[in-house]
Length: 474
Ligand code: NAP
Image 1 (cartoon, rainbow, N blue to C red):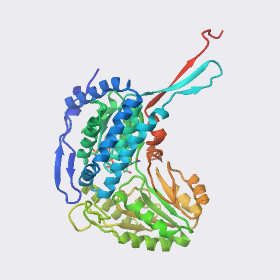
Image 2: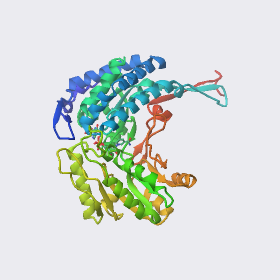
Image 3: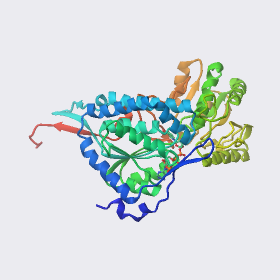
Image 4: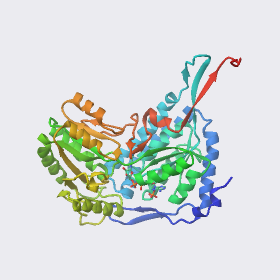
């Protein structure tokens, strides 16, 4: 068999793995990219671990994941501090993410056996059933914006299903990546069950092609999705793609603005606006549009910019300088194409990577901003004449991740939800994610689901076993 050490590309790496504090730009630590030999060794270990891990019982796997959840909860602040220091999320948000990640691990420890029970079938003749078995070694590529939750979302279900994982985390959160791997080892996972890979994109391509790898899961940008899905497809490997979004936040004329505005602010500003399913396009019906925009603008203006470790801060930095510069360029381009800049649009004059809260209006369909994802504190505001126009505008997007509807009439909101072409719609809230709720999108937002019963099924082989009369048909 050809191994990774035979391939010259894999030894031509410089490290992209650096911990840099977004609050002040200081570099805390750099990590080397794996050598070809190290990568080969990790893949071989993960593969040999699979042959053992797949034979363990659900309670044995659950014991590891429950212990990991317990250890996470015992050190919430340590995990959270690392996330805040590496990617700039506000400390309280980081604490919440750590707790949620522990809940996900616990949820799969508790429920996976039931999700993967054999299913009895009723064939016309004889008897049959379907039984679940793990694919094998699964390669996951994960983003920095939720440095633990994204890992828990794959580790919880896939380890419980009996798969082993090799995981490439984003270059800017290397310490979070190492901390999560250590967590699972400390919880009793055998070496090779969950392996962090500090590798380049070229090495990632080799991992996808490696015959030992049986499935590929990406959460990231559309650009990464096109590259990774194409390579997985060329190698006939099942993949899941959790990509970007440009979710609509629809405000109907009867919405209760006192309660809607806080969701609008949270939906756009949580995680400094760097959430795939954040509210990004605000669509208000004409009768309420002026009042909504005025109150939303006032609420956004009241945000307090500051150090994300400071509990009074409500507006922290973006994850990297390149993210900040790209976002400013996107806003400038939107304005150059005719959008009105109602507020913000610039870098905040302080150390670190802070972007002013920004509101764009008058975004015509031929403006690039009409189709782009704004991954930061930038509101795109639209006004429409009626419900049909709101639905049409929500659907006029290359993305199809989520969306929300705010109204006092929940039945009307449900009818609208049925007409929106996305993987998820939220009514009168945008509480995006729960361990038991499937998460994912359609169109350029990707395919497949993570979390819930659906999430664990993605890399499981449901094998049909049929018993029939031994006499062959004549
Ligand atoms: P990104 O550049 O695609 O990075 C995400 C991950 O993919 C990182 O680990 C990155 O590694 C890796 N990567 C990128 N291109 C690659 C390639 N050609 N080969 C191998 N690995 C590659 O994404 P981002 O811009 O940092 O993250 C934000 C995006 O993720 C947004 O579009 C957001 O909407 C999306 N997202 C989606 C979800 C969801 O569930 N749908 C959740 C969170 C985020 P490096 O860091 O080393 O480049």
